[in-house]
Image (tube, rainbow, N blue to C red; front, side, top):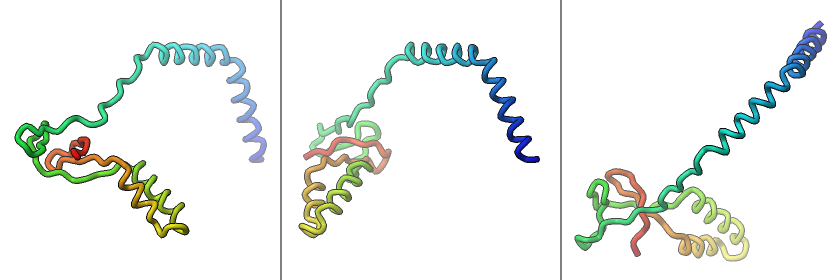
Length: 119
């Protein structure tokens, strides 16, 4: 009995799709035109510059002077992968070298905005 209900439903959906195929194709063409006319996304700034005019770095947004060092998720994943690959050979020294080679960003403690690290 259950197979008859499922089979009937499949047939009804197939008939509806057959008769509505022209409308579905027109909808897809309209969506493609809309996507083509959409302006390209503007890339975000990678890291704004800290204000160092007073001698010590300060956040230009809030004036905060406390910062924490942060790595992106991709950087942390890369360091872990390199560490796992080099573990049998060098006891994880590859992860230390990879961590030194990757650029860190700093995060303002007050407002949470990210900046390029000052070296």
